[in-house]
Amino acid sequence: MTQKNIVNPDIITREPFPASKKVYIRGKIFKDIRVPMREISLTNGEKLRVYDTSGVYTDQSVEIDVEKGITPIRKEWIEERGDTEEYKGRVVSPRDNGYAKEEDLNRAVAGSKGLYRTPRRAKSGKNVTQLYYARRGIITPEMEFVAIRENQNLEMTKEYLSDMERENRLKGVSFGANLPEIITPEFVRKEIAEGRAVLPVNINHPEVEPMIIGRNFLVKVNANIGNSATSSSIEEEVEKMVWATRWGADTVMDLSTGKNIHTTRDWILRNSPVPIGTVPIYQALEKVKGVAEDLSWEIFRDTLIEQAEQGVDYFTIHAGLLLHHVPMTAKRVTGIVSRGGSIMAKWMIAHHKENFLNTHFEEICEIMKTYDITFSLGDGLRPGSIADANDEAQFAELKELGRLTEIAWKHDVQTLIEGPGHVPMHLIKENMEKQLEYCHEAPFYTLGPLVTDIAPGYDHFTSGIGAAMIGWYGCAMLCYVTPKEHLGLPDRDDVKEGLITYKLSAHTADIAKGHPGARARDDAMSRARFEFRWVDQFNIGLDPERAREFHDEELPTESAKVAHFCSMCGPKFCSMKITQEVRDYADSLNTDIETAKQKGMNEMSKTFKERGGEVYIEVEE
Image (cartoon, rainbow, N blue to C red):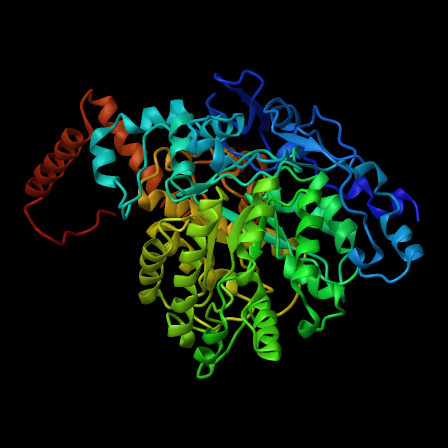
């Protein structure tokens, strides 16, 4: 098998968005930092800068060879700290890719030789986590990077914040979040040090562009991808990762099962500009041919180290599900729906022993801090239907996750908490409040939640509603749901649909909680809309292609792009056109709008009286 047969670089999406270019903001503390943003050129001469997760793939000045990987921008930062070392690492075995024979392994890894990296680890006695540095008052390049990134378009933000009447009227409700007008590197350091935020950056993933997850920052979105035993290929998964980051995925979880798991992960990590998460128990299960009872701590530990050396940034670990929790699910409508949760429940029942992820948790912490991997403590007992929301089992596990968080923090390991699931709207706030209480304000990361169970094929909508609400209440990251949820593996169109839905959920949550600058893009859109700058309306939006496509269905000509109406109201009934005419009338009188309106009313009143004061009059022929 040749390299070209593994991944065809021609299928990787590289086109920039319309009227957009990649720009980079330099660091002030660390001069070599270049923080990427997308700059949209508007037809009125303004430049709008927006948060950009697409990496170098939308930078036309950069050549990319997916068979070698993208530039490791953090390599020198990691080396200069002097607390890590290269080492030989474990030997990749056929079992890592789901095979039994060496020749099968050779076929699986053909084409990926250029992606191999000598792994790094912390030197003996050293801790290399961002939490460790933050607690010792150290601002790292990664911290300054995310501070610059979070501020987005500072100048435009200042312009909007200067209108005090508007700001007071639209001020968000933060539910206890601390949202400074300017995010500084010191603020980032403090939030990480106190456990309220995580910066997931494995030292073996130097290609990643640092980002931060915490309720005092922009709400983030995760996209799940992954091959399966029945469909998908390495080529498709690499493009799916690139496609996901194009449409706003802040992180990507590789949930691959079946063959070539290890090799697929190599391709994704070496080419990913965003943090990559996994659920290691999935691969461990593959190594025992899918028999949960045959799992062991030794197999799981080996899988952790395998993925740590490759560069996985965060692990979902279902360590909070305990043996005595399992009977609590007996009366549930949908039982245990988490794949990881069901695997560990089956193992515990078969052996009648406590969850080995829990009993070996401190050993897992030792591995995590050796590579700076972030915990994403899994919700193995999340509700799979609104009928099971907020039950005894769900909250019993959440309390245990809080206990484990304190252990992880003792080791200076960064920690996220995963949450539901399926929750009706009136119970969402309780989820957020209990998570903050039980888990000591560690960042919350939820799937949805779905607020109703009646819409297969539309669960990106049902979950997007819940996601917006819990994001407003304080959830730090939302795991997207696609139209294929509960039905099948998503393709690229499903990935885009899910991400656009969830970027809307995250953005509306940022506005509602009052994140400074979150509304800048909305205000830019409103101005373009009022001034009939159609092309700007397309380009400011999350999906310029669809916006233009819908507009052009009825008004396809270029002249329609400057028309002062759309096909909905037509030229005579456009409210914005009429409003502009009122303003023009006021300008012609050299007065303000209210005075002009009153003058017009007085003139009409005079005309009414002159015509005899009758309500109905004859129409002149």
